[in-house]
Amino acid sequence: KNEVEQSPQNLTAQEGEFITINCSYSVGISALHWLQQHPGGGIVSLFMLSSGKKKHGRLIATINIQEKHSSLHITASHPRDSAVYICAVRVMGTSGSRLTFGEGTQLTVNP
Amino acid sequence: NAGVMQNPRHLVRRRGQEARLRCSPMKGHSHVYWYRQLPEEGLKFMVYLQKENIIDESGMPKERFSAEFPKEGPSILRIQQVVRGDSAAYFCASSPRPGDVGYTFGSGTRLTVV
Image (cartoon, rainbow over all chains, first blue to last red; front, side, top):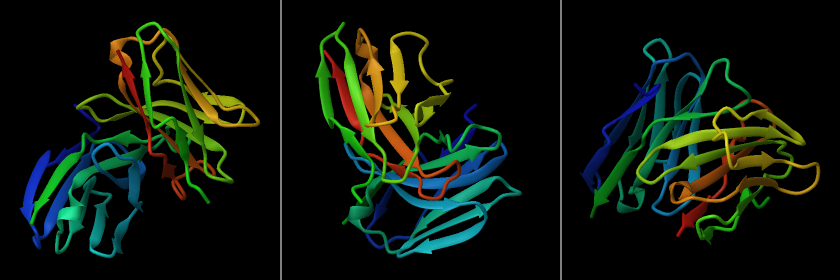
């Protein structure tokens, strides 16, 4: 079983819809990252969380440390949001800032 | 600030050749992490380096793979005698210190072994 599980694996939405991607982890963590990866492209860091909630534009990320769960929300989704969204955690006790990743959620937003 | 620079973006090697992947961290970052993304799989940690030191190489295959981060110049991930199974995207990330603030990824190197 992976230490980091994401759901859903694939998500298709219509432009304008509210989107939620979930991440659950089974280990103690120091921080959680949400990342975005476009096809053939690099990885962009969206958020780094250790508690609570963060917002940037149409993106909102929340984390519940007690429940070992985080969500990424996209409001008023747009076709340019189509990408793979990856949850990654820094496991307590691991070296430096080494990250452990979920498998990613492929998001497709149709116009 | 140019961000984390990886080169080449795409690299094609024949089986048995050597592949050298370069990563220049962001200015002021002395911690470098290499990750591998195999086709249709998630990212996996390979190695963590600070200047002139390998801190954690627990994710590196035992043979053919090596990494360095010299005092001057970029970090290098070296794969000797490449095989088809080495075909993947290799990403580098850097941070200014242990911890998550300022953690930045490069654009990756896509290695294809033919």
